[in-house]
Figure 1: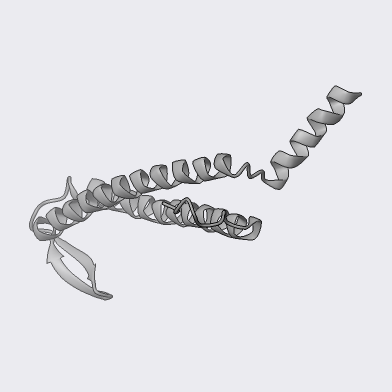
Figure 2: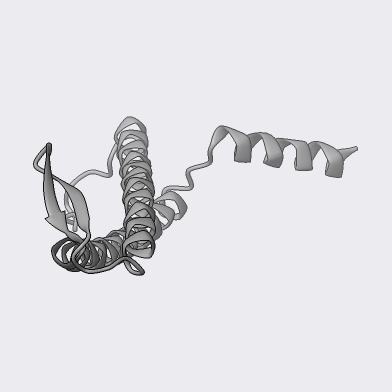
Length: 130
């Protein structure tokens, strides 16, 4: 990590790094939410197509173009896309968990408190003093 001879980071650098780490966590959460919504849409399509006859017409959006296919060809590709989404979601959740842990450890290491935490601590101190 850091060399023992290098000076410790300034308070500004610590805060900037912490905010960047929090922002990365928020981005992970946003992307996970988007992909979960997409997975739910795939689930709905799969649920709708499964009971239909295989030769029935089905339309699929491919690269922004609506193409006509059959249920027999569309359903497997939708299922495969859903499986891929699940894999990506698993990876993103793992990455979020790891980054959240790193952020927490950084926060503890540099004794960082959010405004809300600082207010709660101040309130506790006042209650104990009163």
